[in-house]
Amino acid sequence: MEEATEQPDSRLAPASRSDLKALEASLLGGERTLRRRDVAAGAGVSLMSARKIWRAMGFPNLGDDDVAFTPADQDALETIINLVRAGLLTEETAISVTRSIGQMTDRMAVWQIEALVEDLVAEHGVSDADARRAVVSTLPALVEPLERVLQYSYRRQLNAGVQRLAVRAQEGLEASQHGREGDEDDTPLPLARAVGFADLVSYTSLSRRMNEKTLAKLVQRFENKCAEIISVGGGRLVKTIGDEVLFNCETPVAGAQISLALAEAMAADEFLPEARVAMVWGRVLSRLGDIYGPTVNLAARLTSLAEPGTVLIDSVTATALDGDERFVLETLPVETVRGFGEVSPVRLLRGRGEGIIVD
Image (spheres, helix red, strand yellow):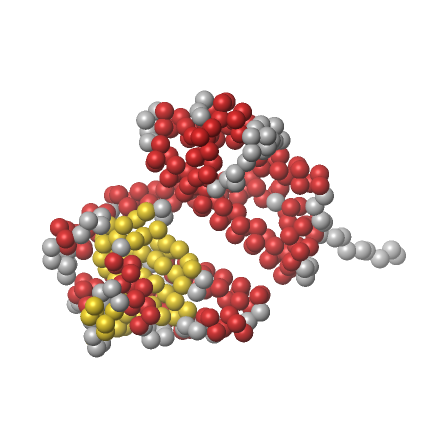
């Protein structure tokens, strides 16, 4: 009886030059046949205007003789330019919106490729270099499904953003008056938000002792846990910076619940170190997907003052939470905080109730 042989996984086949060319044509919508002046002329704009859009997208500089574009590039340029021509966007706004697309999709593409590479390395024991060569064979079957999910997610997130930043903005402004007399007139910042940071303890020393795979696992586990808790708690993960996450949400109660859940989750995880967490309720400016203002800065300063596994808030945020039996507030000695002078930190502890439950 002839012995069965194991079939090799097609995903591990190294990509040939023809594979790469076919993938590029599929992703770019055709072969590169146009120079930058061809595309600008086809869209009916000056080369300078086209270059502004391409720079916003994050494209590299190209020479006049570089054949680098396809008809799909011209169609995309026309789509953006037509929004300006129709008066739906100003040129400045069109460039800002385009930059948001370029930056977010660039990060997303890198994230997805790295996830595929890590999967090949973990599941098949191949080297990182072999996995990167083989991932080209994996992509063709994934592009269309992921593109559909991307469009679905964009529409859902856009709806959530409209609700959060427009429809429910007034609710946050009204809530911000509790404990902040005259706040409406004293600040030019438009949005009332709970702003929080969670920072892993001893991350720098740990990263020096860990190998690449273990460190990547730690960071990914931290980010995943934070993202789940913030999402379930009704907040938004603004960004991650290595060992730190920045989040915001619409009410001080939601911010307090998320902050406590983050500190508790890290303390309960055997693989992760504890986290310092701080949260401040106040006004922020939202720009380019990030948030700015004294509220953000104070939350960052308080994070550095927090003991491992604990949550700190400021006295004004404590006033907004005072009387809520879900929280216990413990006033701490006054601290001198850079940029803010004397600040009265308050330790936030869990009171009644279970808090956020991540199933």
